Amino acid sequence: MADFSLTTLFVVPVGNTLPSTGSTQNLTAGQFGLFLNTYAVATTGNIAAAPYFYAAQGRTNTYLQGSKRSDKIASEYISAWYTVTGSPVASNQVTDISDWTVTPGTDVTVTLRAFSSYLNTLYFNGFTRSVTVKGECLACGGDPCADVDVPALIDSLILKFQEEAPGDNPDNITFSDFYQFQRIGNNQSAILRISGKPLTVYGQPCDIAAFPWEYDRMYFRTFVYAGPATTADFIVADNCNQIANAEITQRASYVAGTSGEIKQLEKNFYSYQAAYLKHLYRMNGYNENFESWVSDGTTYDTYYIRFNEYNKNAYVWGDYITEDSTVIIATPQALAQDIEDILTAALGAPANESGTIVSTTTSTTTVWPSTSTTTTLIP
Image (spheres, one colour):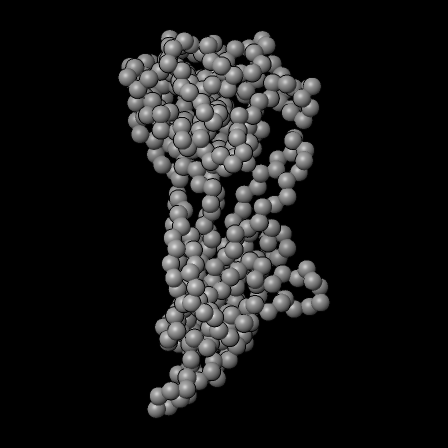
C-alpha cells in the first residue's frame, strides 16, 4: 500500500485450520487464527462484543519471541477495510474497428501505438508503427466503384500486419509479436478485431534477496485515417481524417493474488515479522527467522485492514506522533470464506476493490481467412 502504515502481513498456509481452542501461544508453525482481546479464539458469535481483536500466526522458530501478532484491531478505529479477490489470468485489450467509410482508391492507414513497461524502455511514447493499403472496388451493383469491398480491405490490412518488421535486424519487433488480428464477418459490416497478446513471463533472478516479481500490462491506441502514414498525435487522433470507428471492447488488466505477488509482499513487509533480527534473507545462516508460507501456483484473496491505535487518547505524555497500522491477510481462495465471515462479524462487510474479474467465453466467429472457434477473455 502506498502509505506509511506499520504493515504486518499474514500469509495463510494451504490447508490451514482455524483454531477452535487455546490461545496465540498454542498455534502450530504457520497456523493462522483470529483472537479476542482476552486471547481466546475469535468466532463469528463472540468477536463483535470484544473491544478489539488480534490476527496471529505461529512461527517455526520461536527463539526469544512468541507467535507473530498484529496490533489491537478495534472497529471504531478502522479507516479502511477492503478485499481484493485473486485472479491468476489477466485480460488482454481488444479493439474492434468497424463502420468503414472508405471510397475506392483511397489510401487507408492504421496506426497502432502500444505501451507496456518493457515497450516503454525501447520506444519513446510507445511502440508505434503503421500499415497502409488502398481501398479496392466492390465488384457488384450498378456502379462497381462506388463502394469499397470491406472484407477485402480488412484482409489486405491483416496481410500487411503480418509482414516482418522492416530492416535486416532479426530482432526487430513485428506486429505479430504483440498483436493478433481477425476479420469478423463476410459483408460490408465486417469488423477488424485487434487483440493484444498475453505478455510473456519475464526472467526470474536466482538471488532470493532480489525483488523478482514484476507486474505489467500491454495496452494500445488505434488510429484509422485516410492518406499515407503520418505521425499520429499522442494526445488525440486527427478527427478530420477518421474513416472508421475504433472501439475498445475489452481493456487490459493485471493479475492479482498470484503466488509470485504474495512472495514479494513477504519480502517487502518482513521488517515487522521478527522482533530482534534484521530483515536480510539472502543467507539462512544469517537470518533463519525468515519464513515463507506461500505455495507456488496458488491464488490468494487478500484482506486489508487499516486502523489507528487503540485508545490512542490515553497517550498524553510528551510528544506523541500518530501513526496508523495495516494488516494484510493473504489467504488461499479455498480458505477465504471462513476468515471473511469472522472479520465481517467484527467490522462489517468489506468493500470489494477487486476491479474486473476475468472469465473466459468460447464462441465461433468468422475469422480471417476461415471460420474457426476462438476463446476470448471477457471482463
